[in-house]
Amino acid sequence: MVCVEIRQIDRMAALEQCVLAAEDLWNNRMLRKNMHWFFIFVTTVGSFTKEMQILPDSYFNNKKNIFNVYFVKYAWGWTFILLLPFILISHYYMKRDRKLVLQRLCSLVVGTTIWYLCTSLFFYIEDVTGNCYESESKEILKSEHASRVECKKHGLVWFGYDISGHSFLLSYSALIILEETAIMSDLKKMNPKPVDWAKSLINVFYIALNVLVLIWVCMFFFTSVYFHTISHKMFGTAFGILAWYVTYQLWYQAQFSPGIPPKIQRTNLN
Image 1 (tube, rainbow, N blue to C red):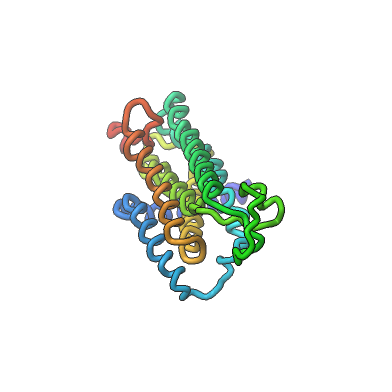
Image 2: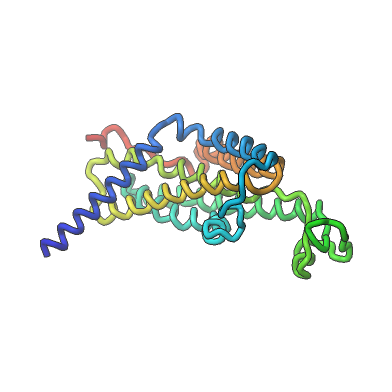
């Protein structure tokens, strides 16, 4: 029994160290508040780098790389699945207010709606601006296939204005995660502290979300330097940043909204 308790203490200590490391990275207010400028910078410089073709081929310009297949293609799913329990547990143990928890969880409903509407819009634009070709050389037009779905169904190639869904979703997801995980700095000041099991779960999800942000940032970089044209990525990134700004920086500041993550009252501080 003593050995089991020691191992549990060691695991909790390791979790705490990981949380502290993540907080050291994101507690820089300038970094957290200017991440949208970082995405603009990366997509701009990366796009020109791609056009100049100065980077050699790598594992990451293969669309079948493991991160693209199992993470980026399901980016909003990963973001949703990890943010939901994090918001649920952290908000409840900070405020003990079920109404507030439900209100804040509505931000995920809003995020899902934005993801669906934007990606649907991108597909529609690609559909109405494109044509079907026999191959990527664009030499033989297959005008009998008038839609992207029908074209690809016949094993052909569709070329339209393809706004980068990856640039949109990776920037949007990363910015949302940073907004929602900012609550950790206040959670550590709580008195009394959350019970051990809740604290451990919050730490696990916080670490997982930070790992997810690093993956999203890295894959955003590789998208910028290897895929799409400049305007495709610029528009995709602009949609991601605009969606974050309109929600967290404007609408969520108002009374009738999902609201921003709560802050601890001074009377609760040690």
